[in-house]
Length: 274
Image (cartoon, rainbow, N blue to C red):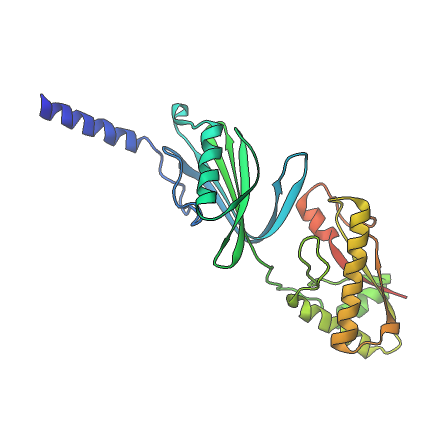
């Protein structure tokens, strides 16, 4: 009887393990959270080398982070195995804290997000509990690899055609007005445009999306425009009298601010012929 009972228990345990669906092909846990809640399998996964995600904060606010984006969907096959919202939130909260992370915000029975520094890189994560599902979003903060940078000729053609042109490849950190080093190729092309035509004078115009207060965005866009002017005059020898920086904040969008892809297009620097 003891032997039969042991065999039965082993079979039951084996059957329980087999009840968990295999992960979807190509999907795996993220290294930040190498383990998962029991009886959940990976139903879907998405990885993008560069994207942005608005990590939610309470009172309708968000914190947008750009970098390598991973979106994992865990699900249970049998709803009796579904974990409570409190269990999910507490598990990810404790896991984040254990590796030295900080919780940014949470709703105790629904979602949690926060950040941690791993190998010198800031990583943001958000876990959300749904009915029979857990959604995990992770952004490893980093600058985009700029594959397309407009050249002086395209700037010249744009100015001739419409009187203004957007400069792709000028980067700032969120809410900051310091031109990032990876902006150098784009700035070099703007400088070449100005050197090829010594009579050309430009307004450098900063634009933002509509996230945040209007007054703050106006000041930010002005500061960014002036930072670009400073980079062109100090690093590239362009006469200060040929450039003037202005900020118009969110007042001249080129796309809807309702979605992140539109907001990304609205955060830009333009050259306008004086």
